[in-house]
Image 1: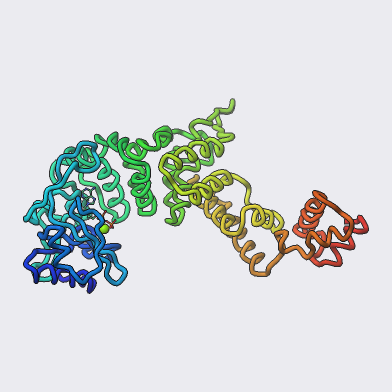
Image 2: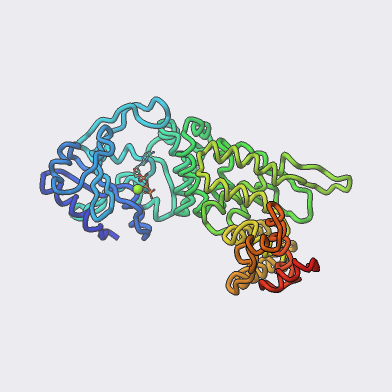
Length: 442
Ligand code: ATP
Ligand code: MG
């Protein structure tokens, strides 16, 4: 495919720059995604115009100075932010992360050369077609991710590229080319210099992609910022429930859950405390009593280090904590869980239980049916508005007060009545509940 349907604002910017005598191309991720048939998330334009020239040429467009120092201005058109960056050569890297300075150039080839991978170094405009100096298109065709130039040098310049490699492999099903892969392993320690939130941004995309092989082949890379993962490698569980070591179980369970961030993070971390909590029984059977707590301790530090939001952290912590609690298809139990954890978290808990079982020996996955049944029961309870919370109870605090109860007693009585309703021992109707309470026979 040689003709990409660039969005109007993108072609308008390219056209305007061309009219003013500058070269301009869509570049990087958007060209790659076009070739993959995936809608680009955002568009980058690279141009021979200097930033001031870009701004002058694009008068009339809404322009924000986002990174003039690096040659970038952002054009906001139809609410779409489009980054327009001057052809540049990166200066020296002193911290394995960002160049000290950048130099502008008039040659597209030099700009493409500073990019990380061949598949990310293609440019396109409607007049010229595709510019592909490093064979990105053929790499993409055969599903290969390859660093441009010497991978050791490229990762040495910017350690984040190591994780970007894993991210592109996971998101687009690419295999990292051998030399690049060896270099990823060899240079993994460079991730130690990268800020937590930048690591998290890449990790999130790795986890939400097709991450199974990536975690398996590059667990040592992930272990740079999650050292406990390395302990799971080939950690034999010594139990009939598991035919996989801890790392392989984690990988299978992570791949088995839908690609929603907090669920994928939960599965990556749910058993990570197992090696720490392993004990061998006299019968040669392994036990991991308390491992959920161990995983929570590791998870809490990890999530903080990588600066995850409170929302993600709270969900992940609760899901790890509850990943081993019994879920049965019994109305009262399900209602108590719905009450305690809320509807969304209950359904997430079921998903975690199912994914966890998917990572176990096949003959021990029989509970998955129970989990699905419990899910159906919960849906029915919610749809039929069966009572599982104080706010659904047919009596409230004032009703209890009217019977002469005071202070803490009121809450106690309400909870007591809710228990009765949940257990089906009393109907959720005001007369029955109050009469029973007043007569002391409830
Ligand atoms: P997506 O937008 O889908 O996340 P992308 O490839 O567009 O993927 P961006 O971070 O938007 O990624 O970067 C745009 C382009 O800039 C890349 O395609 C690549 O050519 C170049 N690039 C980005 N980050 C780096 C980096 N750390 N080192 C070298 N080149 C990079
Ligand atoms: Mg992009």
